[in-house]
Amino acid sequence: MGRKVTLATCSLNQWALDFEGNLERILRSIEIAKAHGAKYRLGPELEICGYGCADHFYESDTLLHSFQVLRKLLESPITQDIICDVGMPIMHHNVRYNCRVLFLNRKILLIRPKMLMANSGNYREMRWFSPWKQLRQVEEYFLPRMIQEDTVPFGDCVLSTKDTCIGTELCEELWNPKSPHIQMGLDGVEIFTNSSASHHELRKADQRVNLIKSATTKSGGIYLYANQRGCDGDRVYYDGCAMVAINGDVVAQGAQFSLNDVEVITATLDLEDVRSYRGEVCQPNMFYKKEKG
Image 1 (cartoon, rainbow, N blue to C red):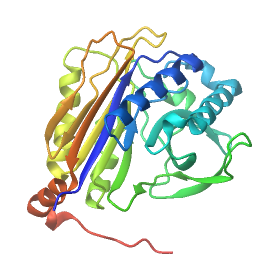
Image 2 (image 1 turned 90 degrees about the vertical axis):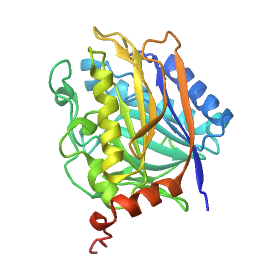
Image 3 (image 1 turned 135 degrees about the vertical axis):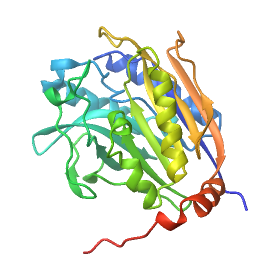
Image 4 (image 1 turned 45 degrees about the vertical axis):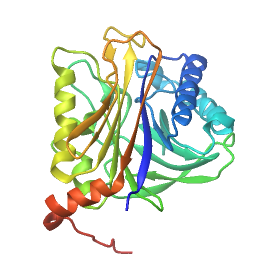
């Protein structure tokens, strides 16, 4: 018995503080994803405000305008009937986090803050953001008045549906020896997503492919990877290469040096392939543990 899902990921040419332009490109990517029958759309890291805002992340206006864009996304008819996964900065208890916001049909489902920061080479994320260090814990986040909800789960959580379970990674977390996908896979998460702002270096795209293939070879699963494209107002070039992999095989991959502002990659995959693979390869190491309380 097959259980097929159609998923979409993308590379977007987002610009720092270009809230209107970023919103337009996000909506266009969602529109294309829906046209291809996708029920889940993943975008790049901090796509609402742009990754390269630098010290503008300290400004309250950056947070405010990000929520204003989020409100427009929630209210848009384009975002209906598809799970949308977007990136933006959020302040929780006066601490700034680099977050993913998942929503469906005008309702925010969860907010997942980044747990492992990129802070070497060209990256200085610890200057502007703090990592979320409370593993497998969520708190109640009070949304601003402009959003027509009161509270939403905030923390290290996954999204469970009637068909499957979806877990989030953000950029650096894929490269870390304590990658969240390891434990998530052992706990039964079937779809992993990674939203990145990964700049171009020689052979770096090959490293990404190998990491994603390795992640799904070890524990099975579907892996969606989204990346920024272009310069984002910074001194580095983000080279796209959005991709989809399943059980160690890359089944769809975007261009590395495209001039298109929006590129959407979709794939229709069978969840039964993940379950069969895990039953054959991973079964002795997988377990279910009910959390106390």
